[in-house]
Each structure stands twice: as C-alpha cells, then as structure tokens.
Image 1: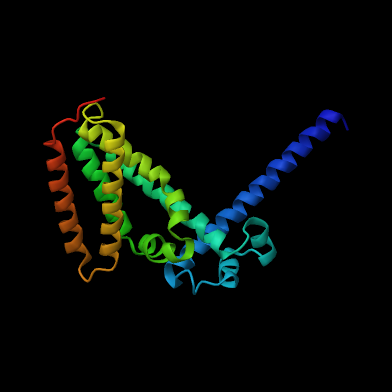
Image 2 (image 1 turned 90 degrees about the horizontal axis):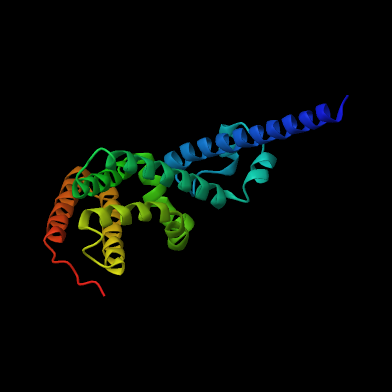
Length: 213
C-alpha cells in the first residue's frame, strides 16, 4: 500500500468522522427543539432528548457540556432562521421604508409561531439570560441597522443617531413580540403594533436632516 493510499484513507476517515459528528449534532438539535417547544426548557430532560435523537448520553456529552449549552445552540439556530426569513421578505421590496416595515412584520409574525415563541420569547430569557441573548442576536440587529440606514437616508443623519434609532426600534419590536406572546388576543395586538410602527416610520420620514460635523 502506497503512502498516497494511506493518506487518502486517513482523509476519508476524517471526513466520515466529521460527517458522523455533524449528523449526531443535527439529531440532537432536532430532538431538542421538538421537546423544548412542546415541554419547555425546564421540563425537557436530557434522557428524553437523547432517546428521541437516538444517541447515547456519552454522545451527547461529547458534543455539548450540558442542557443549557444545547438550548443555546437551538436558540442560535432559531435566530439564524429568523434572520433568513426577514432578509428574504426585505428583499422583495424596492422602497427602503416599506422593506423595513415588512422586515419588522416578518419578525413579529414569525415570533408568533408557537414553537418559536416558546423557545425564543418564553424560555430563552430564563435559560440564557439577557447578555447571552444579546450576543446571539447581533446579526439580526446588524440587519436592522442596515434597514434603518436605508430607510432614513444614511447621509441625512450621523451614524450615532442611526445607531440610537436602531436600538429604539429593535427594543420596540422585541417588546412587541414579547407582549404578543402573552396577549389574550395576539392577532389584534400584532395589528396594533404594526400600525404604531407605520406611524413611527412616517414621523421619521418627516424629520429634518441633522447637520453633519
């Protein structure tokens, strides 16, 4: 057997091991999302997750330190999916202000999906804490900053004012999503929140530009 053949077999073995590792991670994340959504973070046990994923406890601990780390991975994937959905909807509108509004609509509507709502709005604050959630959601916030910049006209205001406005809008949409999640009539509150965002964006459009230094 030549050295080249041995090296090729080793590379193939490494790839196979990586593929098996990726498959195990995918199984754990899929099972965990299902049980976190149905039972909640506290009630979902590692035994049940491993059983549903068809992996051993040893395999679990090879990939994740504990249940909190697994939940964080599930939450990160939820945020990635949400960001992709927002970006997709945003891309359908040529008017920057309408695109921004529709992106916020997508955020709120997607957050109303029961499993997403349970994981991202109800359980995440207690399971992860604000700092970890803020760190994970930076991608979504960057997208919003871009949308706000385009909607208000990035040359009309200095960057720090657009950053401040982005923080206000981001906080408003997150609080609106949380309120909708706990509302007796979520559909009515959704429409009310969207109307308020319309008023806000109309008011922003009428703001005089700030003199640049």
